[in-house]
Figure 1: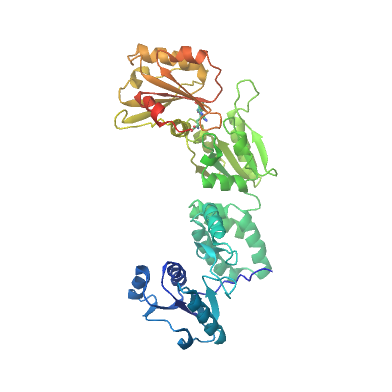
Figure 2: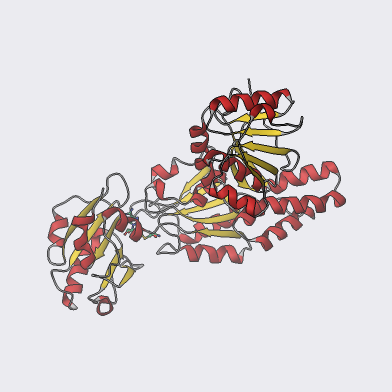
Length: 457
Ligand code: SAH
């Protein structure tokens, strides 16, 4: 049989709490957050409860508890939380006889009501309850869910509350129902979650004027370096609510597996051998799908604004007046460095770090070599393996010591990550003897010497 979940106004009833230890203190805190009227009776009280009494948020009676002589009113809600089981039973009995509702923290079967675990995004509230039978499980669930319910839900709740008031006078009941269904499916809720209130107002207005039959949006999302655990919560939420996902080569299968099978997906990678989709076509596809009313996610490896052409794709969206947001991702340099145990800066080694890409449009590698030679700087090179020998040679020629440590991180953050270390002098020969797979990232500088000591995977 199911328990009955009801949501009470905090001040609907008076609460009497017996006991003022740690558990009681948590219940009291919840009651106070909901503006309940609370009287606490206890021999002695936890400091936090005394503070609430001093602030006049609760009434605190410090005295011995005497079950037969305590008086209860019919409509009281009684929370029994003393350390003494016999006393708790006697209090429960007396309270029930007087017609009050009882919650015993030491006996959920003997309780009329229990406190659920709560995720508070007022005015939205998520309550999770096992009817008191397994608090550890409800806490665990609450923690998991917390992560998926952004704090901006509060704003969304308030926005809806206000809009609802406004619509009461302007739309009829059936119109309101249609409006809300369309509003919830539109980009407006997400615009509020990503703090684009003006855009949400515009979307709402267009919906009200019935203009907005079809208008999607695009989220340019960084997928991080590969390990799905390194996605951001927002990235995951957007992937789960997308209609269509455009992804490229660096986005691995493990991340794509998180997306529901009903979601359309398009590979627009630029693998050397395959037919690749030209950049202009990608830009156009994003615009086309958004204009068909689709929620589009453009998923890119690492961070979309670091060697990711994110900027180019957005320009097109701006021109077509498609609404968009950008979600940062963990860039390969951060991911590879962390998972290889190579701090990119370190007070004994490097005070700055420089990210460069060696790839030119024509596939060759050219870098401002002289600028890169700096004793206290870590150099991170985003590009494939092919240029490594050339890079080591050029850096040495421009004056970087030949024994400068260098690491090549292969498939960083993925289960089969490997870290190859050597020096500018040895690296080219070393990689020639190993079969190394893309993607790889190169880290150069004395921080690399910390890898032996700090490696942890
Ligand atoms: N926007 C991406 C970079 C795209 S450029 C980001 O922020 O990470 C592509 C280059 O990134 C690759 O050639 C490689 O050098 C590097 N890279 C991306 N993911 C990687 C990984 N998991 N391991 C090693 N290098 C990676």
